[in-house]
Image (cartoon, rainbow, N blue to C red; front, side):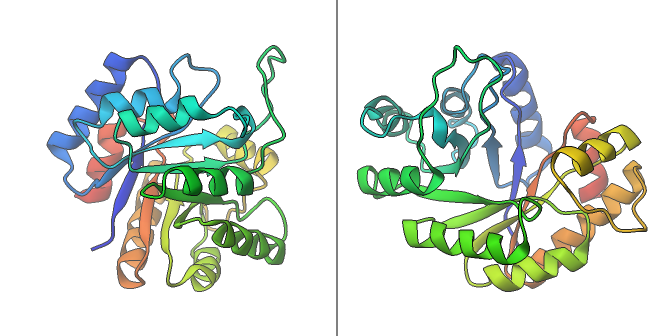
Length: 247
């Protein structure tokens, strides 16, 4: 059976703990928790991960490369050690809208190399954005991340099984989590298309029914093809979504 990660947004700690405990109690299909690092929240991903770790030992915070000065990143390294965090996801990160927040010219490749050098036990995942550039360019970027030491990959959400098939063929043999995110309004679909350049097939309908059916198809596909799944439920009722997927 494939492993299934669930993304939990780093809101207030009591809210996060309530969500995680609900998942732990009711959905044993979930094998790990992913924490994105979102600047609109005060809580950083690694701080939330340290609180979740006693409940879900497989908790994976995201690290934005541009937030770290490679010559002075002892704090995050010590935090990961102290919190016993065994895995992270390294992404480039978007520049903050608030220009008072300091950023650095640190690339994903450089941060992966740094983390693997300083914490050789740490499992470092990298992202795959199947919409960012052409497929050939993204495949080349995947190879660069593998050469830098990436242990596996998490993808952006897919909405078309044909595209899933293309990327899983390229990623075969690695630890890969195929992203799924429910899009249940036309506004949300428009956002994904304009902001993230996502591709939706002609039969796509922004309903819970379509998204649950697609999620089940992806989970089944991943189980048959040695892949894993990464659920990103955004702005929907979490428990209802999971119950419908795993019924």
